Length: 74
Image 1 (cartoon, helix red, strand yellow):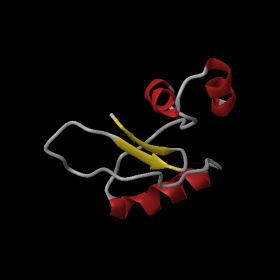
Image 2: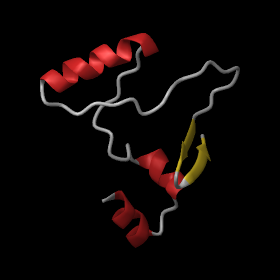
Image 3: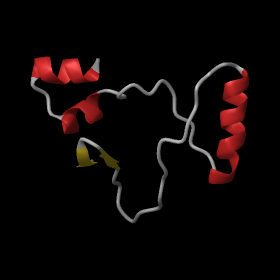
């Protein structure tokens, strides 16, 4: 769906990630040690869950997305 929107609108991937959630229904930020338990709980309700990234402390406000389409920094 997002690829079709991007192609038809001529929007670049950087803007797509800025405007859309790119298919994520919900994100939960937690300690790494708790992730497996949360995934198991989601699975018990037939909800697919997975680790999609990590947060790191920074001196500046910055978000970097790295994937097969490139590296996008906001």
